View 1 (cartoon, protein in one colour):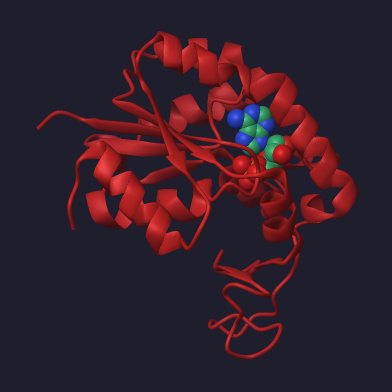
View 2: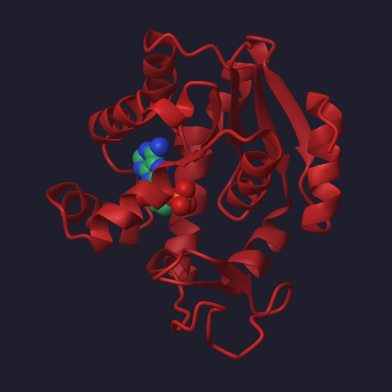
Length: 214
Ligand code: AMP
């Protein structure tokens, strides 16, 4: 079977992670999230995690070489043999070129379109479980017990979901990552999907666009 190599593209808060997780279940290929990998490295206090921390908390990008290295290693693991869904990578032109140099031919780049007002609303209510990685939202997807994950741990907010960091992340997106929209459109890979509405609505649009049914 041919590999299914997909990529999620869009600003922070567009729903890339949420939709990548759904595709992971539907297509049985792993979500490869550089943000999750970096947060995991921080929790484990590795050298990589310590190097990444300051950039992340300020809403800036971790240097290309660092991120390219972890993705290259991750894609060699056997669970990615049948394909993967890249979430949060590539984020710069250099990363996009390095992905092509790794021999990765993306089948589709799923670009989620969401208004800036909606992004701010989504990010400001986001709650995460530091233990199991589950994600909630105060308004749209509240936990059953206030402030607690279903696994029992206390929910936290991401440091980079603070308003100042959100502003910085949006600027970083516009300057560094948005040019990839043209990059992938020019290569005929871009699928532009309306990312507003419920996660179910967005998932249905993605399924239509990539031609999978569940
Ligand atoms: P995310 O969870 O995708 O929003 O990523 C959180 C943070 O991790 C970003 O704001 C960056 O600081 C860092 N990061 C994640 N992916 C990348 C990447 N591909 N290149 C550089 N930095 C990244």
